[in-house]
Length: 207
Image (tube, rainbow, N blue to C red; front, side):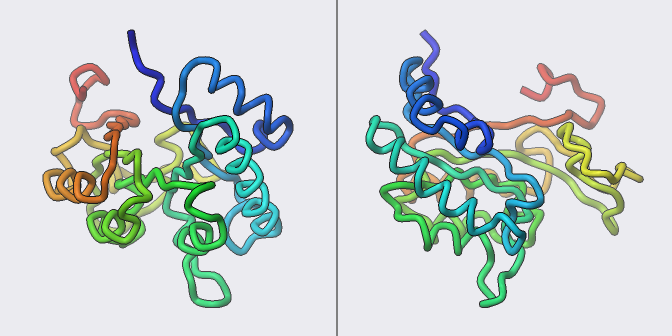
């Protein structure tokens, strides 16, 4: 009886067979399909950025035709500034129509990038059906790569404990304010994501 709300599907897998990828998740009852992460060459300002935006338009159109909604799940690198001074995430949402692409704002990476999660939910009110709730803690100057903590070692090992994921409500996030903003924005689902636990807790204890 579990509802399959959404699926994170690598963009390269979807590009190989857009209609087949979307159809597979429609078959199991997903309402949403999300681009979960993009590799360096696909990021804002990189060589395949324009190609990525075009692909997202195409995937979004296929999803719409099949009755699903495409989402984009951000990290912190989408906030890199483009030549026009606009951050990559805003450029993406400006260049893919809202009926083809909705947000899946990851509150951890929003705050880690220096942005206010509440303000971003207000900014994309009506376009944020699924919200990723995640908490973390940072102390002092960050060294190393926090992505090593989620199994994405991009060539740099984490050198200290300045960054750690924490159970929801035990880190830097103002969780009640985020939930209130999500409700006001018309969000339908709050998805709690717990990456590698800290504070000596197991995943189940974190839940």
